[in-house]
Amino acid sequence: MNLEYTNISSLISQIHNYSSNFLKTRLTQEGLPELVSSHGFILYKLSLTESLTMTDLAKSINKDKSTTTALIKKLERAGLIERKSSDKDRRVIYIQLSQKGAKFADAMSSISKELTETCYKNFTEQEKAVVFELLIKLSRNFEEVKPD
Image 1: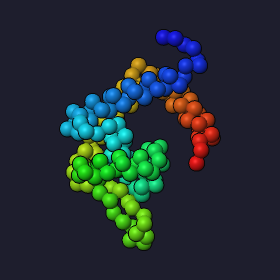
Image 2 (image 1 turned 90 degrees about the horizontal axis):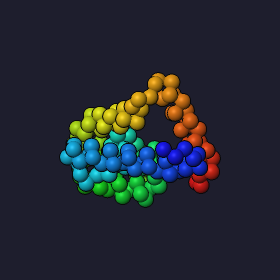
Image 3 (image 1 turned 45 degrees about the horizontal axis):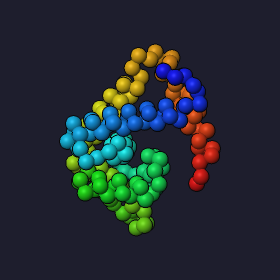
Image 4 (image 1 turned 45 degrees about the vertical axis):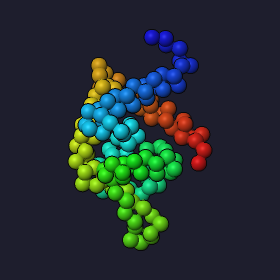
């Protein structure tokens, strides 16, 4: 492996591609071949909470609102999520898992766990902590320059 540190963006991109392919394969095995990793991530995020606003969901998956809306529409057509208007403000839309989507929550949790185990295979607990800490630091560097 070429250990030239200036290739970090390329390495991160490669890891992202590997994880996306992993998720796509697992989603297909779960009977959801039309979904991509971003859909799986939305389902996973929604499985952790009762509902999220479109704005909060977009932030949590690091996508803009228009991209998130397109992803949500596909999940809605598949019957996996539902939209609910806020009782207090009709302009606020909440996204939640449908009954069909909730059935996939366990599968999403299992897929997420398997992905994490694959990422950390052959790592000691200390190495896991160091890698995670360094990735957080790297992410924060970009958050500081991220346009709003």
